[in-house]
Length: 345
Image 1 (cartoon, rainbow, N blue to C red):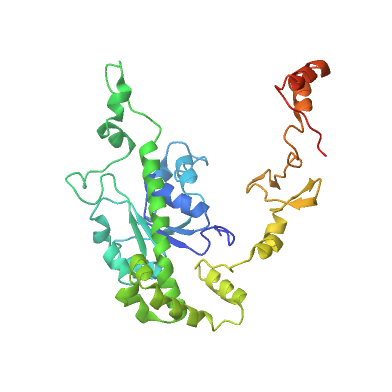
Image 2: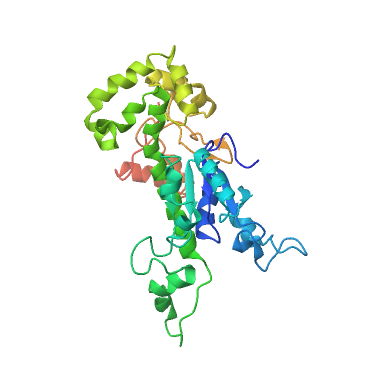
């Protein structure tokens, strides 16, 4: 089944009511990071892009390359949202979901029974994202939009016309992809405040969720002196710090042990990543330094040598090997004070 237990969004369930490009691109990004994306499609027809003109299978009309590209890694559920029983299924899926994404025209989801009010009634902490061409309010809110429409109304088509007798369309669907990308970012940002409800549930302190002192991040910061001992009392039930971190991490609440510098250097994860390579030092022997944080071709990047021990230690080598100067020319520069050369010792 799609999704990886080791991925960044492993354990996250997304209920996807989107179609065509902007919405499906957003949920494709979520799926690529490990979320379980449940794509709700119309029975028989499915997503509009299934019927694109370039099909992967001869004789099939539902395997367009467009659809395959944007919907990789998702699950498909065929539901007739006009059917009362299907709406019951949607409510059950919402109870199991963390995120809902839709890109219908404003007002359509309410008619289909999958709007924010309906779904959050069964899952109050649901992150609900609506993608539309012109937003949910305003005089243009009910106007359908896709890339060419946005290109025309944003002034881009006019600017790109230049000396052409008429405006020309651009076939790179930038507006749709950007809309999906922005929605992806907004969803991730919305998931971050959801840490508090998860922690409250773990502590089995439901009254804290409605306590005005702790209702918002700002309120929790203001009342941290009151909140801190509550959390610490709950943490005291664990036998070890590692037990607490394991439990919190399993519930998707970020947690870590506070390490001393010596513990950081000795940590097995950082040892495997070769985060602290050794270099030579003339006076101290082997000296541990920090590595750069990235790997290249799945291998750590190590320093190519020791640090220069003395100022000018490599003057002669640089002038000879890089500039091609002979010994007499280098001696002249040193004697004139233009350069200085010292030995490494």
